[in-house]
Length: 77
Image (cartoon, rainbow, N blue to C red; front, side):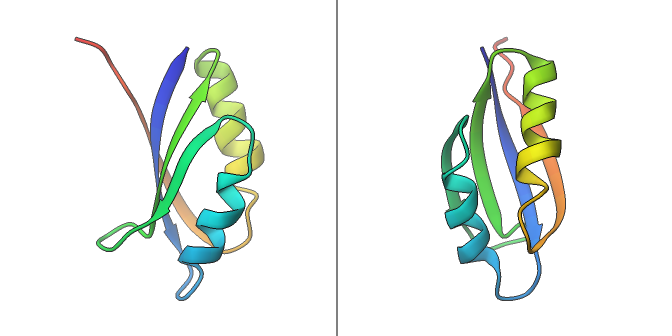
C-alpha cells in the first residue's frame, strides 16, 4: 500500500466544504481543514503509486473549489 499526504489550496471560504467532500472519497483516510499556506490536508491510501495518481487526479482534483494540490507520498527509511 502507498500512503500520501495531499496538501490542498482552495478558493477563499471553501476549505470546510472541500474537506467534507474529500472525506467521503474511497481511499481517503482523513481530510482536515487547516490554517497556513494550505487550506486542507488529506491522508490517503492506495494499492500502488498509479492508483494514488488516479485518486488524486480523477477524484480529489475534481472537487469544486480546489485551486492547487501537492501530493507527498510517505516513505519508510
